[in-house]
Image 1 (cartoon, rainbow, N blue to C red):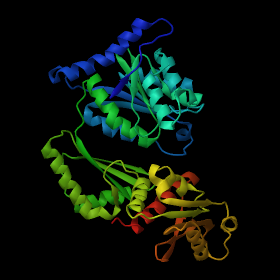
Image 2: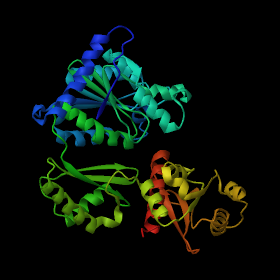
Image 3: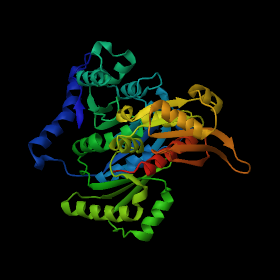
Image 4: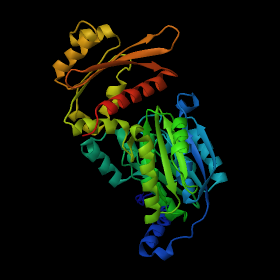
Length: 439
């Protein structure tokens, strides 16, 4: 739900801020007091502005537009356009002005973090004329998250506690940057964090309920999301067509990133009968493609692997060359990873890795040394990138199981360096997922 901003305007516009503030709060109060007072569902037009120089440079594709449109359409929201702009205030403001001329809702993604190029907050304050102020609740939550006093928060982190005084904020359960709501007269500008994991949870849990009350959109229907790895998007789609009976009224959406595919199956209403239909559909899909499914909720592949290791009281040690520490970084981002990850070594060459571990010999000798040094049951060794004649670049991987069983395989690398590393990380995690089977 939207969190209210403090009523404060250091330049004297108290009444204007108060009116904007009440415009957000009154629909919430009325809805709580009586369901009959809820506004009639209607179509709301909106524009999307995706920020990020990396997108314009072709480093990766825009996935936000796809997620937002497929998530908001069942609520009665109509997207009339999407654009991508650079992380510059003038560019963001020009895009928002254009959007406000086409729709009464503009959703901006990215640029809410603590770095110097995170300028979305200030850009939107400038274009809407709505001032920003630190919110005491956001400030307290951020200090608690970092385990410091409010006074101990660094100034760049405190930037993330500044929210519109004429509007409010959306809680972020997956990160530190709250979403922002600027109420500009009859129009609204919403700013969402850039990381997909943060944005998607915020849209489902915070933005959708807010829009239902602010614009009278429909409440979300029911849906189930299945997360796949090890099988391509088109392959999954083909197998669903061949082996699963899909009712015509079920809306199917999919999203692909770095070798991982999410398929969402939804119905416009949310009744016990609808939920039962989705449950039966899920069972049919699991029966057909269960070996490729790692989650039916927001659980990431990294979280799933860590969970498997924890369920077995197992430990893992890593040694990386060709992956540049990407696997270590991915697993370390999981809060419980310190319970399973007992050692991680990264070196730019295999020779330096041997020196680091005081080991000589082949990969088998290296994993044995690492296993003994860390007393870990599982060991993953990612070798250097090498060129195979007539083929693409590959990395050799060695995986040591409990009981000294060892397996080796090669993973081809393709695409840009960033995409290749992401795909490599996914394949390494998938192999761990398949090897460390649940109890």
